[in-house]
Length: 169
Image (tube, rainbow, N blue to C red; front, side, top):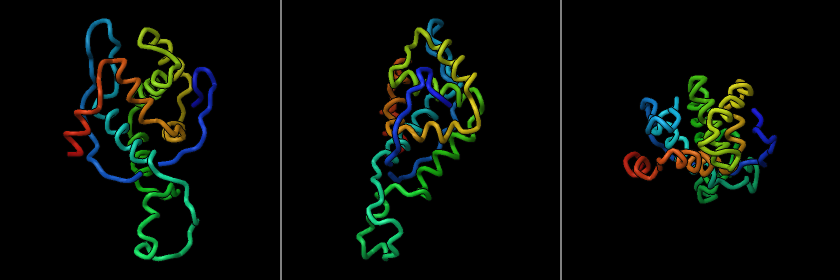
């Protein structure tokens, strides 16, 4: 899925952790605010997990064969193709329905400055037109996905701080 302005973001670096995926319903603020097809809880879950993934570093010694205790468990802080956080995020995003995936992409675009709440419908239409089966891959290629989603959600007047405290303690 390409962005409305065809900007591309470079690679990724990400972290590990675990939280229970939310199953909340869609949010609605007022008659002037567009209705999200994806719940705030789901967006916040993705924000929290993406930020864990964002803290990862590039592998320093790819597949060196050493014992994890010997290398002081540094590999958990490295971005590897089999990273469980990346796999969890990809599976979670892939399991979202069409409208939820489209809203997620639109929120990310808004969060990175490609639009505002006032032109939500226009941005969402573009996301609908460009939707394909690679949504999770497209989103996870953004190295600051969590920040962009949080910024987009903030335009609806929501934050993820409460979610993080409630679900991550």
